[in-house]
Image (cartoon, rainbow, N blue to C red; front, side, top):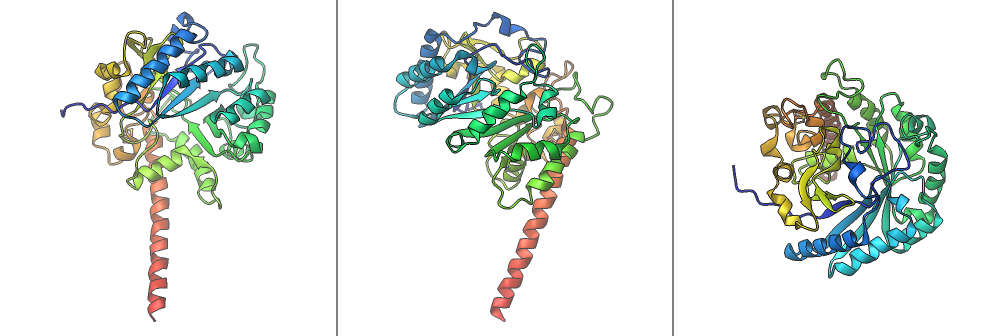
Length: 393
Ligand code: SF4
């Protein structure tokens, strides 16, 4: 093995609130065996925010970074209220010098209002919305603690985000795939709001908790089939104004460009998660695997961000290829696929040394998209050759 050279962190997902006003039944925070959120303070305290700012400053200075992103996450970050968001941003900004800081909020959208939107627009704080599509799709999972739909609140939020003002900071949708929903209906609903971006997420499952539709066999690829119905619409849309992360990542990596997501490719993962008490974690979605899977045993009051590069859990996310299963290392799609998202690889027996539980879907998705792009490139080349020839006749 070559010597490990860590890649500095470039962003943090900060759990500013550890509780949520929704009770989505697939939630990786609250619906799995990891109950550590119950020990977390409701909100990140001002002392912890100050320490967070100092740690970011220390890290960015040491590694001479010119930019750093801070995402307010939860639970539901807007439960903290507008004054808290202002304070969070002020404290972090005061403690960090000489770099471009980007702030963002990932929200379930229920509490977004005009005042919060105004503040975010005037302070250039981006907002991402988690929503699974039209009312029927969204209500399958995204209900509140009384079992009531969140959809009407989300429609109001969408009005705000898709207004001229909202568009300045709206990053788009995170949408969890449910095979029960018709992909074309989901895409049609989401795209009618003209979001800049959609990330369709595979549900957080693994080999010991198989995904819906793959319980009997992992050789079937219903998630690829679901996504390819959307790809066939999206790919031919002109002008193409919506970025769909999965499709764009596959095409970029296939063309040898750099990836931009921890779920794809083999680039080192350069973000960490901060809990409300200041604990530093590798990635929060690992909560679906086993209790304490996210724990590094480090806290911003006692550890710098460079300390996490001594943790095997972080090294594994930075030196991705070396820690893949043999199947993945020998797979001809690995440079694009990256072996799949870390939580999807888990089993009690082999830990994370398995191909993704969505391997057959990933294979079908990548090869189908690759075939389409290659065909188009060949058509363009043929056309160009004809044009060049006719110019010389
Ligand atoms: S998860 Fe499957 S498609 Fe991806 S690299 Fe591994 S074997 Fe290849």
